[in-house]
Amino acid sequence: MGFFAEPAFFLLLVPIVGIAVVLGIAEKPLARYGCAVSIVMLLLLFSRSLESLAFFVGYLVWSFALAWYVARLFAQEHPQRIARYRICLALQIAPLAIYKVGVVFEPDFLGFLGMSYITFKTVQVLIETRDGLIEHMGAFEYLYFLVFFPTFTSGPILRSRKFVEDMNARLTRDQYFDLLYRGAGWFILGALYKFVGAAIGQWGMWFLPSVVGTESAGAAVLANIVYALGYTVYLFFDFAGYSHMAVGLGFALGIEVPRNFRSPFVALDIKDFWNRWHITLSHWLRDFVFMRFSAASFEHKWFTSPVTTACLGFIINMTLMGIWHGLTIDYLVYGIYHGCLLAGCELMQRKWGFYKKHKRDRWFKVCSWAVTMIAVIFGLALFSGQVLHNPL
Amino acid sequence: MAESIDQKVIDLIVDITGEEEIGDYRDVDLFDEGVLDSLGAIELLVNLKGAFGVSIAPTELEREEMNTVNKIIEQVQARL
Image (cartoon, each protein chain N blue to C red):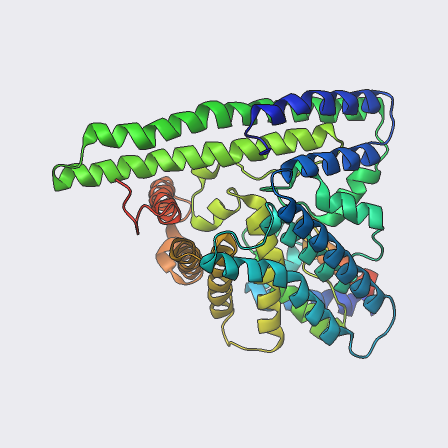
């Protein structure tokens, strides 16, 4: 059963949310219930492939062992703990890395749906245990964090400390109602996005180019622009719609799932865009890749100028983002492209006197917005494969 | 002693941001004013570690916990 797609999924949500509401009204804790429901939902998700299920269970055992070992390493002074921690981190990333490489050669390579997303969660727990921010995480807390079904297949990416705080919070009836009310709003908005907005985008990307035709060179260019615009509309409404529904469902279960989209099409520059589009992904990468790289660079004085650190950091960060989507040429180019855009934006904002002088002018903002939107839509055309494998 | 910690932190912030008068605006939101961004913040954390030996992980503090000169000084003092 696919999440947020098949009618069966939505029908199942009725009793799932219904029971949650009864528990919430009775001011009973929701964590055990949420965890049990999540496990049942994952069993249904993997019901068509026992291999996937077995691999998922193996992944859980593996992650538990690594988290337990790293927690033990940092609970006391250990002379080689940093070296051992790095090995554990590599071992935690290994299943996904092997999968991403394997699937290039063999489409049915062993993996499971949601593997890309769960890796963010397991890696974050190891890194923050090393940072001393996670002192103790119980087995039940870790299990629920990993299996939490609303965000399992495609995010938003949760952070463990906030999740544990939410799952252990004892909500009063009024607090729960407030959460449920806001959650219902998110869910309805998400459903409209996905089933109306995304459908319109899809119609636009398939139907309109055929009206324009591709007989002349001019028409072909126009058809491609229309297709790219349609795809942008489709992808935004589909993904933001799904994300909003996951937020709403999370709220009903007492978990404040973070927002993943915040009006990305009003962004004035590309940095602003990444603070609005797939926010939990870009912030995860910012916190655990970009910032770590920058800190190491400053500490060891790799470069004389902080701008060099930032530009290189952006390119590494976004290339990794591309690789995470999959080892295909489209995703790689997409990642490097955005890395270069961010680096260019950084250079412009720090070095270009003209920018500093005019950045608050209205005409400059309008131009900056237009350039950003063109760059974003072209980026999505790279992402969809339109640029490299013309589908029209 | 306390005065010198304040001054040292302010000097570090001036070094990174290039805003000489920042010490006179201790409660101004540095991120809102565009004085500090996430790169500047990370440079500051690294320099605070070098100057005071205080270790603050990149995800330890929310932006609202270190967005003014006074809050940054407080965070350092709490760890000394």
